[in-house]
Length: 446
Image (cartoon, rainbow, N blue to C red; front, side):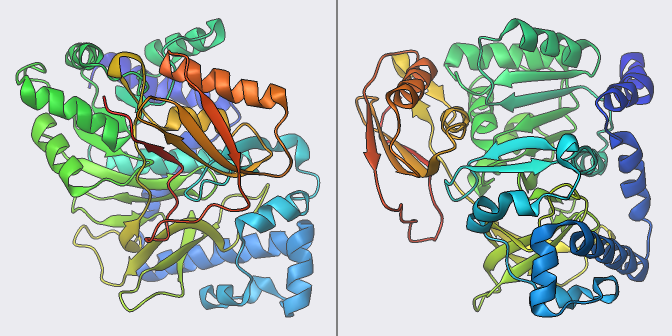
């Protein structure tokens, strides 16, 4: 390990997190220690955390205080994991309608506002807190350490950030690069020239971890397979894919091109960090951070996933319908971890947008624009062959001219060309036959 990585791991990263009000490194060490627990001790840990969370909800969260009274849950401190099924499922519509009553009394100054498009294409505003964020980040670090990637190791993220950065974000880039050993490469402009530049940078920087959207990393892998030798002797220790379905053909191409393990990370802004693949290839649920249930499973055990976050005290999520479907596994993993397992996840798949001169732009870039319009209860963006857009939307009220112009300008800026944007209000947007919603679709050709 290089001296710079040691300095970041033992000094700069802990200091950075402390200044941000987070205990990420301490939580990471705690989660790592939990992996040495027996299955019985791990079960007791989960049960204790669940009871503490439910007691907190009953005393300090108006919505849950009323729910507990209605169902007769008088002593949540003595409940069992099986008692969760007696609580109502937390729907996104409930979060919208009861949002303020789901916030812990007196915690408003400590809350962090987030918005997300989610798997259903319905924008949602919710609140998190520093402790929950610390645990989410610590779970990421924990899973990566299974593959020999540790805090402070060099990391490159393929993410949906714009190429043009403000002065403030430039300062953050410098801080991340030179203090935290992290570099973000934009997923919004995937021309062959830019992909070649990215590969040249990877060969120089030699990150131990590559992280990001599998569809983006797959395109980089395709270029690498077509131009072998661009990385020289460099190989990452891990490529972790997130935010999209890691389909088999994507995994195979990425693993072949980079000659390293490829793992799936499963989580969301609203649900938290839920699961990650181990070196044996099995998805482990971070069981002392979240409890995952399957609602109304079919004959194959697949149903809607319900997530209870055990570390989100500012705005508790109990039995939250996250919008994905999946199945749990009952068998222990050969890796020996006490963490429970997900057998499968049925998530979403989204298209790339096509911009000027055929450049490909990750669909998350459009989501960043649309999710900041709080009146859009649901939306679906369709790009036509001429690059224009149809925005099918379910607004809580008609969009103003200013809001329409904000969306139009943002989408044109994303494509780097002027295109028509047609706004089409609707009463509802139906899912596909699979039951999933696609919030971005493109008919344009690159």
